[in-house]
Length: 252
Image (tube, rainbow, N blue to C red; front, side):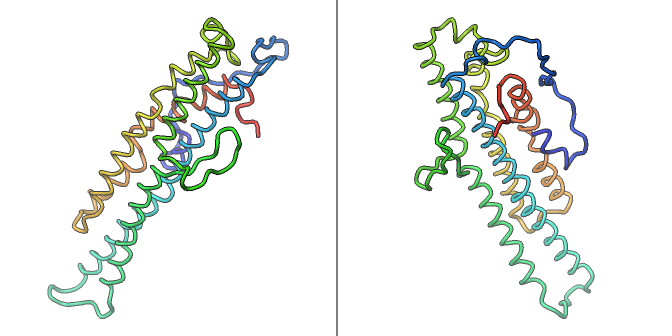
């Protein structure tokens, strides 16, 4: 998330996430990396699906949602300014209230749609690469939880085929074992759930046409910041780790 917010906040703040180091040609590959199995491919695909879901979330919030929120605030401010230049009791020569109210109501509908999208983001079938039908689509947060469950199921499958010692000690690619991936990523949905609750509250505040410009500005800043994802979202917690630890992470 920190990288994707850089365009709104300026240079991103360095984090404690690992930084990829050049891999020297003379460094021997681990046995797991030298002979990749179905377990490796499934683990990578599930991790990439979590990244795709989190980036879809960011796009909906910081593009669709932010545009609607800003348009709502700007239109409301324009209407207030138009009334401010007229004497008390007088009306503007041209109709402005109706068109402005129509724009504002449209923005509120768009914000409600954004909240709906956050729990209805379409996803790709993790292993076939095919887009699923509408009936098969699950809520985004639920889908994240399903991916985490699938990683845990993969862990139990590996315990049967490779053994507990392999799952716990053998690096899957570089240094992290399958067990470490599964145990560490289990709480990935928590910051997104908190963020959804926050955004829902901000939308409810923006519904009021009597909201002051100063309060509206603070809400816009909160919307951009996405407080719970700045330090705990996918990009802040996992992207650098996977870029280092997962072989062929960005391969197409």
